[in-house]
Amino acid sequence: MKIIKVETILISEKLQEPWVMGLGTATKRDELIVRIHTDEGISGIGSSYHGHTPHPIRSLIDTKLGPLLVGQNPLQIQTLWEKMFFGSIHLGSAAIQAIAGLDIALWDIMGKVTNQPIYKLLGGGDGSSDRGPLLASYVGCQTLGIKDLDTLVAEARSYVGQGFKAIKLRGGGGVNIDIAAVEATRAAVGSNIDIMIDVNARYSWSESVRLNRELMRFKTFWMEDPFDFTVAYHREEIGKLRGMGLTPIASGGNVFTRFDFKDLAQKGGVDYLTPDVVKSGGISEAIKIAAIASAYNIVIATHTYNGLTQIANLHFAAAIPAHIRGHVEWDPGKYNVFRDKLVKPAVKVKDGILEVPNGPGLGVELNEGILDELSFIEGPEILGVPRKRTWAAGT
Ligand SMILES: [Mg+2]
Image (tube, protein in one colour):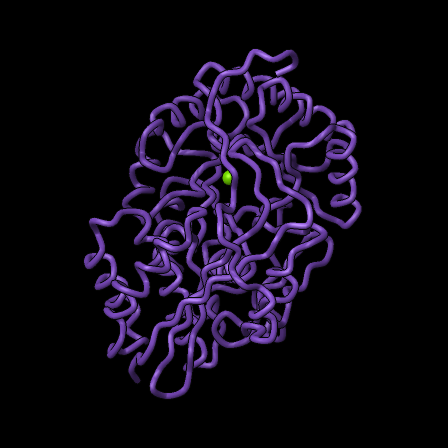
């Protein structure tokens, strides 16, 4: 069996309502899909994260990594991963994200060839033969942005009403604003719902300590990404804040490879690690990161993003050791075409519990009929705002 072609498909969905967070405002969502074709008629699909700049990642696949794969046996995933990694090692995290989508597509092919879902190939599952494993989720992804308290509370209540037991707010718009958001949400949903807040690396050390301490009053489940993390600075501060034993810390949505996670863990680590297979190097690499997390007794709560991305993360979460498996991120927002229509069958969700697709490979197929409707929208996915201190009243 040989790989004969690697294809990239870039799509967008205009958001019905802008999504506001500390990083900026999103008006659309993009997804970069990869598809690997073989000479035996079997093809595999995957998704690469793009850091809101999908053209360079697509170019890395089209001009560098894809050509490395053509002519190779798609079932030798470990060999191909190393070939891609060491062939692009000077290109940093952009190349890791490009590799991630290709790795997922290779696992999809492996599953189709062996007629097994990916989570089973990795030794995961919960013993049921007629359905996929059931995983607890937390409301995250592109939901619960920064908004006025009445609207925020109504939205949070709606998710609790659907049976979700954990919800993540978006913060980073100001320490007092974040405190007010968590306080109002706690009052609205009661004490038995886990509340997280993601501040998207917007705060200084002193602001983070103040917020982290205040959040204890509301039994906050975690505070996510107090500092910049992507390029390995501020990791000592993350470790130091965690060591204070206040509100638990989550980070790692932008950890790239096992080597990167080793650095984060050794500098004090986190309470909850949030790797995403489309960022961290694919399913192969995320499994290795989970093994290190287990050795450090750190809980994994998968980060996730779009339609196909969420599916790949479900297989990863179902395959890791149960003693480190935390909530799985999910987007239950009202509008999400990537979630509802891009892949079929859609994931089954009941009372906040997700069922991992049980078919061969990823267990889903691309809905070809909708690709034309999702043509790429040029321009930035998130209109970012610079980091700055504010002295406006109430912040
Ligand atoms: Mg985050």
